[in-house]
Structures are given as C-alpha cells and as structure tokens.
Image (cartoon, rainbow, N blue to C red):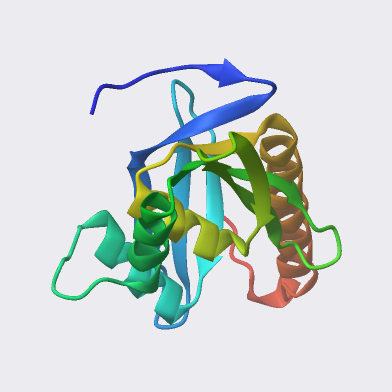
Length: 169
C-alpha cells in the first residue's frame, strides 16, 4: 500500500502500518497511533478483548472472521463502503476519546457518520482497510492531558519523599 500524506480540515491521517500495540503490564494494553509525516502519537487504552481483536485484524488472522470483518463485508454486500474513521474529541470528564465511522451508501450516494466506541471504530477501520484520522484538536487536548497527568504525578511523588532518606551526591 503506497504511503499517501495529506491533511484534510484539521485532521491528520494515521497509517495502519503505524499502529503499534503494547502490553504495559498484565492489566494495561494500549494502541499507539502515530500521525503520518509527523511525530505525535495518540495513546488509546484497550481492554483485553479489544487488544486481541485488534491484533487479529492487524495480523489478518483468517481462521474465523471477527464481528468487525463481518460488519465490513455486510456493508460491502449492501453496496456501501466504510470510508473513514475519525477520532474527533476527548470527553473532559472521562478522558475517553470520541469517534465515528463514515459509511457511504452507493445506492443513493449518501454518507452517514455513525458514532462508535473508539476501540471498536479502530478495529473496524483496520478490518475494512479504511483511512484513520485524528483531529488537530484531539492531538492538542491529548498532549495537554498527558502533560497535566505527568505534572500531577511528579508533584505527588515529590510530596511523598522523606527528606531523611535522601542521600547527597
């Protein structure tokens, strides 16, 4: 698949080849989405099920189709296609990303933006081989949230230091 770099209405494309999965610990699994032609990375926390389903789609394991492959093939069978997946916002209360997939119905040339949980939308995008986009706003909010988290973590760690246990160098 050729690498195509383009920016559209404040959205940055993510190549599926640049999705990396990592097991941070027994309980923490993440997908790292790197922007095309840039250095920013968006981290999405995954459940065990989402992690393993995404691995199956990325590695194109074909022993049995997943629900995501099934949905993708159903849309195609009904003369439609899944055009793109977009991560467009972060919920300020929960920290969860908001996303949608755009489905085109070729019978009447209409498109539908369908709200979908980010991990399901990501797995569906990989299964249907459609482009994945992240808005500039999400990259900006995400970097601010990470910075705030790191500052709070460092502050808490410094507050818990016992000066008597420090050594001088």
